[in-house]
Every structure is written in structure tokens, then in C-alpha cells.
Length: 294
Length: 285
Image (cartoon, rainbow over all chains, first blue to last red; front, side):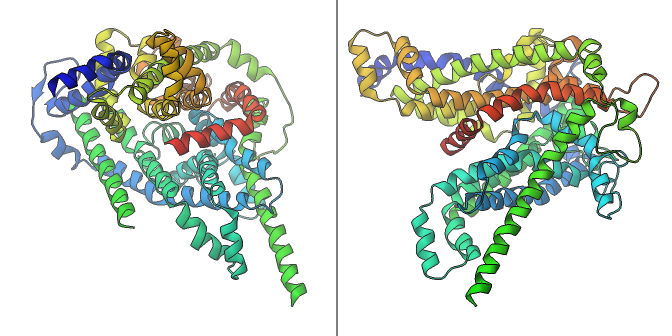
């Protein structure tokens, strides 16, 4: 038995050799940091002076910090409002553009997809001008059709919605293309059969399209949910590094960045990272469980 | 009855197209705004009421952003980082993916699952330890610091492995019998066979490093080492001399135009193929 094992090892020794370069980098910058981060979270350290063991104190402090809870609330808002909006618009767009009666389909596909080619930070910079309260295109457009200006970026009520608008603009077309790939895999014969039975477009969508693309739908929802917890670049550039006004659009990652690299409270920030991780894990597990139970 | 049914269908047909055009316009307007603002003098951007057509077009913004800021240097830095990152990561991921798909050694499932499970960790968790590691290596404000920490990309590994499975074993065995070395099998046979897969993986790696704002913000703290995302974010926060509270949107949009134009041109030229690649990548994942 043992002999067989070593024979397999020897026969496939190049397998190990070829894995090695990847694993080397992977260990130094992915595996080791996980342990290091956990270690840091149990200590008080500013990156320079002596380190002091504090146990779970940081974890307790994190969940009692108003600014952390506020960032959590913001992220839950981005997740709860932004993800359904983004997924629904991508799915509807895909269903419409998959219909053979629509003209100029490849043109529309291109137009909805192109924001994905733009750098995330640039998109946020462009929109900070577009959504400017006084000099922006958006309010100018709204005024033209008789709606009063909205303070997109400088009111606590709208700053998160602005982040959602920008995120949707940049990603809707991308996820639409992914949905389209799934829709193209559905046999048109299915639709024809249902249509002969007298089903309307909405019924077709609900009873044929939706069940058949459920795996892709779950994948997209999961990726977007994790995305909400990772949000950083868009709100950072759009509403400033602390998520103006008064932290109303500060995300968890922005908060962690700010406390790590401005106050250098590295242990505390690491503890916050682990709490965020536990939340992502929770969200993913709930969604996986829901998927299994269906 | 039949007439009204057909009329309804035609109306529905027209209204769907009407909405599509409307939404397409909403998608294109920010792009239009970026382009015209790139050629407007700053005072015109800050003029009320907002004008939809530019009055005085100027190339001054482009000149200023190119010649009087560190924009070109940042552009160059981003290109260096992207090229080195994509090249190195593609090599590491495809070699490891080849190993995981084509060699049946003890522990390969465990290793793969271990790599895959780290996807669940939020990237921000690595930021602080990696910052400390980079600092220890003396890699703050260096290309090494910008490139190396992300090259072992798990998504890249996953994709490369999936594509490597599609390389026929018979092909490899035949070449092996002809005396081909194990590395040549990978380099000269497997890689060319999965070329479309390599393109997909390269696109995904490109997107990952091109937009790696958070990490680049931490590593590139001196203006000389700024990458494009860091440069753009810094420019947005830097008011023109003597004008606090004013964002230099003219320069910002001129820079945006210079960054976007090449990519958009490539995208329009290769639109179909590019979108197919994205779909292929997502379906493999």
C-alpha cells in the first residue's frame, strides 16, 4: 500500500513541481496573512511600537463602535436595495434582448455592456460630475422634465442611492451578458410548445425561463451579495474617503481602510475584518442552504 | 378582435423598442458628458444653467493633464503593473492548473480545495498583513509591491484548471512517447490547445489588476509610483490653486478620456469576441 503511494508520488513528481511556483506565492500572500491577521486581531499594535495581547477585546469593541455599525448598515442597504435592482435589471435586459423580434440586439448589447470596459475609479469620477447637485447632467435632465434637483451626493438620504446607481450602470450589462449566455442555452422548442398551449410572455418567463436559469441566477446573486460587502472604490471616489456626508455612504471596507491607515489601529482593524468575513460566510451559507432546499 | 390583438402586438413591439432606446441613451449620456467636459474650460463646467452643448472647445485640458501632472507616469506605471501581473499570473495559474488537471498525485484535491476556499475570505482581510509583509520586504512604492501579492490568483487557477481538463490525454501521451519533456508538454502542447481559455483567463486577470484600487492605494503612496486609479482618486481631491472646494473636472475628464479611448476602441472592434469570452469565463466558473 505504502509502496503504491510512493509510486504514485514518484510518477507524478512533475505535478508537484509545476504547482510549486503558484503555491509559493499563494502561501506568502494568501495563507500566511490569514493566520497573521488572526494573530493581529488579538493584539494591540500600531505597526511600530511593542505589541500587546488583548484577547477578544477588539472583537467586542468593534461590534460596539457606532461608526462600524453605521458602515454595516450602509452595506446592508447597498446589498438589500442594490443587489435586487442590479440582478432584476440584468435579467429583464437579457430576457428582452434574447427575444428574436427585437431589432438592433447586438447594438443594445454593446451599449449596455460597454461600462464594464471602463475603469471602476473612472466611472465613479465621471459620475461625481454627472450627479453634481448644481452642475451635473442628471439634475439638469430632471429639471428639463419638471422635477426638482436632487442632492445626489451631498445628502445623507441620497448618497447610498447614488452609489447604487453608479454600480448598476457599471455592472448591469456585464451580468446581462452572463444571463444571456444561460438564456441562449434554453431550447426555443420549449417556448413554442408552451405558446401553443396559450401561455403569454410573462408566463413563459416565469414558468420556463426562470426555473431553467436558476443556477446562473444563484451564482449572480451570490457574487453580487459578496460584492456589496467588498464595496470600496466606487463610494471612495464618488463620495470621498469617509463616505460623505457624515459617513452616510461609508462601507465596511472603507471603514477598515480608514482606521488602519489613518489611525494605524491594526489589531482593531483586523478584528473588524474577521467580523466582516463571518458575515460574508453567513450570507453565503444562507444562500447555499436556500439553494439546496429548493 | 383579431385586428385589435395585432394592434396591441405592434404597440407592444414599438414601446419595447422605445424603452430600449431610452435606456441606451441613459447609458451613453455619462460617456457623452465625460467627452465634452474633457474639452471644456473649467469655468464653463462650473456655469449655470448647465449647457448640454459645449461653447468653447479647447485642447488645453489635455495639454495640461499630459504635460503638467504625473498622469503619463501613472499611465506608464499602470501598464507596467498590468503587463507584468497578467504575464506572471497567467504563467503561474496555467502551470498549476495543468498540474491539477493532468497529474494524478496524492493530495491534489486537498490542495485545490484549500486554494478555492480562500475565495470566501474578504480581500480586505489580506490587506493589513500584506501591507506589513510588503513593508518588511521594503516593497512600499515599488513595482514588486504592486505586482507580486496578487499573482497567485485563485479565480485564474480555477479557470486554467477547467480549461486544462479539455486537453486530450492521448495528445500528451503521444508527445511524451516522442521524447517531449514534461515542461514542453505544458508549454508547447497544452497551452496552444487551450488558447481561447487563456484569453478568457487573461481578460479576467487584466480586470483584477487594472481595477485593484485598494491595494494600489496602500502600496503607491508617492506620486512617482501612482497607478491610474490612485492618480484619478488623488486628482479628484486636489483643487486647482486658489480654488478650494472646486474639483478640477476638466483635467479629470481629459484623463478619463485618455484612459478610456484605447480600451473602448478595442472593445468596439472586438465586441462580439470579447463578450463571448466573458460568457465563457462565467459559465466555466
